[in-house]
Image (tube, rainbow, N blue to C red):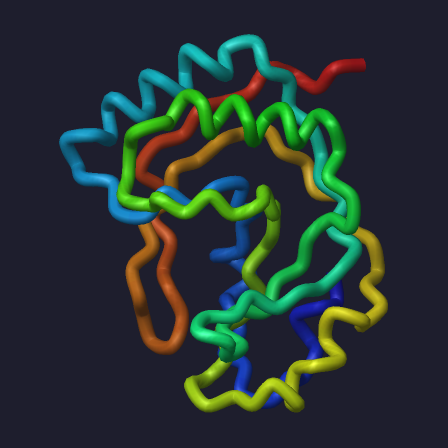
Length: 167
């Protein structure tokens, strides 16, 4: 996917090796809840088949009205991906510190905007044409996000393999 070669004012790109599809943000998850989260996911996802995500659009997340994150994601969320996300939400209910109830928005974070990046500098990004890219979803991974030099470093803390793709 050539999106990583794009030049965007004030953007600190995420290294390609750190890119992953975010299905849900948990917030802080204490170490003592990690085994519980892994067990819940293992039980709830045991028969859930893998799927794929068609990344075909760009978007910008904002914090306090300011551009904060450039992302790519699907223009339309497939039924299989919506079911997977809902299953994850139910199985992890009550864990973590994220109390937000935002609309499900699967995405791959491409970069973070520098503080002070103006709205007019990113206004056209959501209309950029994207070359569609199908990405397989075969595992659900709980990542810890640790802020590094301008971008977070993602550390896999637990993973659950999904069932083989449905034919």
